[in-house]
Amino acid sequence: MKWALSTVMMLAVLLAISTSALSFDLAAASSNALFSDHFEGTAVDPAKWLVQENTNMSGNPAYGGSVQAANSSIILSSNGSTFPCVYSAANPFPETGDFAIEFDLTYSHISDFGDGLWMTSGPKWTIPLNGSSSTVVFQLWADNNVSYTMTRMFVALLGKEVWTSYVYGWEADAPTRLFKLTYTNGVYAVFVDGIQVASAPSQVRPNSIGFGHPPIYYLPYSAQHLSTVVGGWTRFRIDHIRMLEPAIISAGTFQTTVYMNIQPNPAGVGQTVRINISISPSPPTSNDRFESMVLSITRPDGSREMKGPFFSDPTGSWFILYAPTLVGTYRLQFNYSGQFFAGSNMTYLPASSAPYMLLVQEPPLNTTSPSASPSTPPPTFQPFPNVTETPPSTSTPTPTATAAPSQNATVTPSPTTILARQSSAPSAQKPSLSTTTAAAVALALVAVVSAAILLKKLYSGEK
Image 1 (spheres, rainbow, N blue to C red):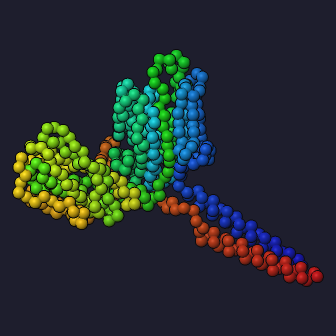
Image 2: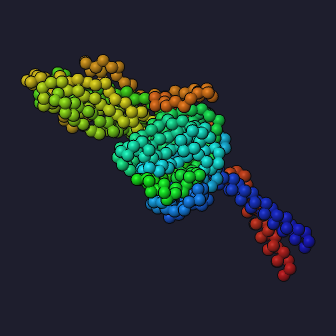
Image 3: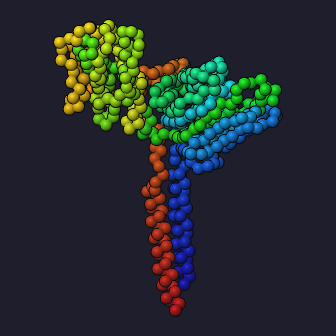
């Protein structure tokens, strides 16, 4: 009987050990999850963010700040003397290796008092408002300090302004922008709407994210100061902030080239001409298409026509039929606004064709006009008699790795740089049961079954 009780106790110990191993393994897997917040629900997640609705360092009455979570967004605003500050409750960045973080932000009202979002390596909310410190890895800011009829958004990387966008109008709003910061092999890169705008080397790693307005000695403003200001606080909305999986950190950025050709040229008034267009390199896959392709036509009388936007075929080519109505020289230029292909994680930069002149004469020329039959598919780009450019390749190139700049290099905007992903990021897969966990579960099951059999025997023997 004593032997049996000892065996039961031993099995219980094994069960406890296996259960502990299971709990530890699941906890470790959970800690490897990448930081992400889509602001679902009606309240800010306190496990991710700490909120100061009305920052107060000056001692003046603090009021008016508002932080709202609704419709999968977080909205910060104020109609008072100070502004909210929201900052990460824990370090959302990996402590080693490469990383990439993206967020979208919409300024719905840009006014005199500016605010924005920042990522720093120092105290959670200590940030110079001009972005002049190298400990502020990234800063986005908007205010109305340019003039009463113009507002400004800017991005600073490591304390230097690298991107600026001006919005005209008094207390104007701005379109939603997608921002991304990557850190690859010791080099930061900033992307706005999928287009790289700057890069710089640094060993500084951020450890916090903040947005709103950081606490500072002059906030809240005094009633006297508020009475002298015509405008108020800038307002914004964020829909998501998330760390990207290592596999989808930008694979490459490509400079595009636009080619155009017109047939026939010269042409007569009212005669249909065919404008052939092609962009190189071609889209990443056969399922991708170039978008936001626009043709600008300046007529002989100086008036202007805009055609589009158009979509390309899988090779990056397209054509347009056009009938001029005036005698003289038409000036045509084709513009592509650039694009980010999420499926291939590739960025294609904007480009414009060289101006192309179409000579139009009074009598229609004795030339067969191009057919607009729907049975004729859009042509694959081929050399035309009056094309001097080299026809583009129809294959997608492999991006070339860019060497990391030296440590004393300055922040340099690089819209044409071709980047390559040289992955050294640690694995950050979603939590799953490991081999150790499976073994712990199996051990626990064996212990339970063995204990049940032994207890049944003991119970039968006593009877």
